[in-house]
Amino acid sequence: MKLPLLFLAGLVAMTLIGCRPPVIELGQPITDTITASDADDEDWKSKTYVIDVRNGVQYFLDLTTKDGNVVGVWSGDIGDYIIEVSPTTTTRSVPYIFTKGGSQEIFIQSPASQVPSTFTFKIWSP
Image (cartoon, rainbow, N blue to C red; front, top):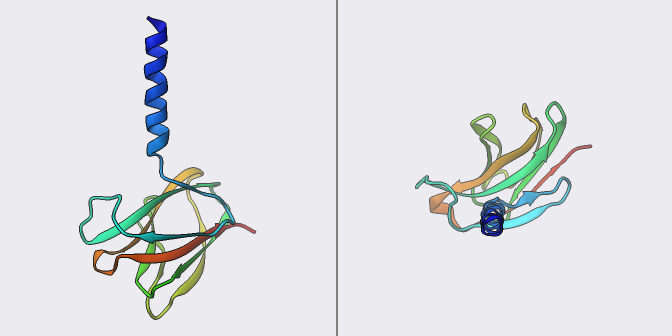
């Protein structure tokens, strides 16, 4: 009886791990394209990522739009955009201090009318 339960527990763990959004490593830029959405918002399309941060530490977020579309990094922590770029400002870097430490989900979003949207994003701390 224990063997089937252990097998089922392993399947559940693999399923949960497989559903976790990709983790962004500090200092490593990522380039990706928003084509669909992870969220249920019809007006915006997004890619979800996880970053591991410490509260009270200043980080810098760099965001570049590769095709001139509007792209923003939404934080569920504050319920607002941390950084946005647009056709007039295609590259930005902003300082940001997270209020909670640990794994944080961020959503890189673009209006549905402007997908596909290609971007480069990096988070780093001095």
